[in-house]
Amino acid sequence: MNIDIITVVPDLLESPFSHSIMKRAREKGLLTVNTYNLRKWAINKHMQVDDYQFGGGAGMVMMPEPLANAIDELQKDKKYDEIIFMTPDGKSFNQQTANRLSMKENLLIICGHYKGIDERIRQKYVTMEISIGDYVLSGGELAAAVVVDAIGRLIPGVLGDETSALFDSFQDNLLAPPVYTRPADFRGDKVPPVLIQGDPKKVEEWRHEQSLLRTKERRPDLLEGD
Image (cartoon, rainbow, N blue to C red; front, top):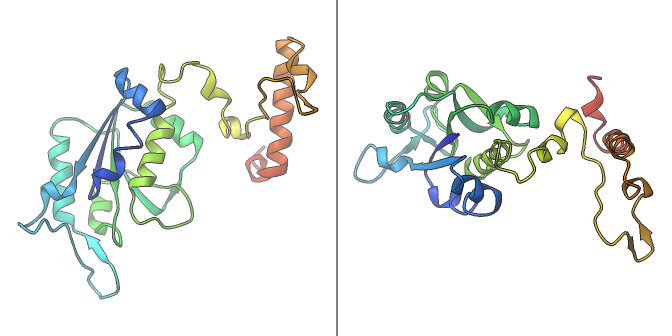
């Protein structure tokens, strides 16, 4: 899978993809992440990519020309399955969206900054708008890193155990069950016996029951469609 990211602060995206699972995915050749500095397509020698908004008001807006030129140039080399704009007014990102995007080959992510991007870019180029929560960040870079991480770990071969991601929270609209490791008795608190007795069917049943209980207690909204 290939993911290209357009940003005005590419340094913000160096660390998230240089460690842990994302690093291993890139080293295995399973995931390629390229960051492109929008200022490469700036309109003048001052590296300008933003301007005042029409109608007045506080905050600068990312100009259409640099973004259009960047997208046009990048599309010459590859066809994007989705052109994604990270924005607070986008559709809330969830596990199901991550699952769908992990099956794509080429994604382009536009990181907003300042007051946002010119609406004409959204209308002409953007095919998907994503929000990671009902709050506002300084820019779309951290949100893009969250999306790439959520997608990247689902790519076959990235995780050591191919079935691991299937039991994550939000798969099947359930939260993950409690997990335990050694020692079996920690300061008088013991691991549930079913997890030690070695019956895979009973373990699976226990985990499903615990997932349901935890979801009902903490996120009953996830069960509303059932």
